[in-house]
Image (cartoon, rainbow, N blue to C red):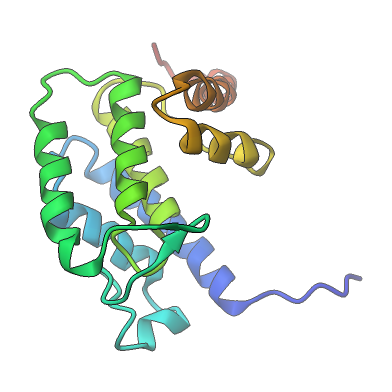
Length: 185
């Protein structure tokens, strides 16, 4: 028996995260767009206590300023413009490599377009984009979280931190794929 209690929102978001994965697999080849990103957020936060707060804006950009790691993020009134520019620049690349996906992710996290769930949405986008571009996807597990945060903080000045963390996560994912005899590059 454990004395730990479980937050109902955590359970709902866990279930919703699996729904997001299904959505991403189905839409892996779709071009990245604002509407796709907003749909991921909507699926992730659907049915949570946040979804019942009018100011929270589930499935749409934040209404209130927020911060990440003590750093200010993009003001709400600038989010649409900055996300549109980010997606446009990213989609202009014909062939994307892992560093392109990581750079998009870092810039997405700096904008922090949603009231909450930005990290999870950003990591789901990376998963989708890896699938779209024939790159072995990866999941940032708890044992890699601190390295991942260090990598984000230091990207692009020290790209090896984030790249190596994601490559480790990719190796872990590839091992699972190998076990289940799922072909990959």
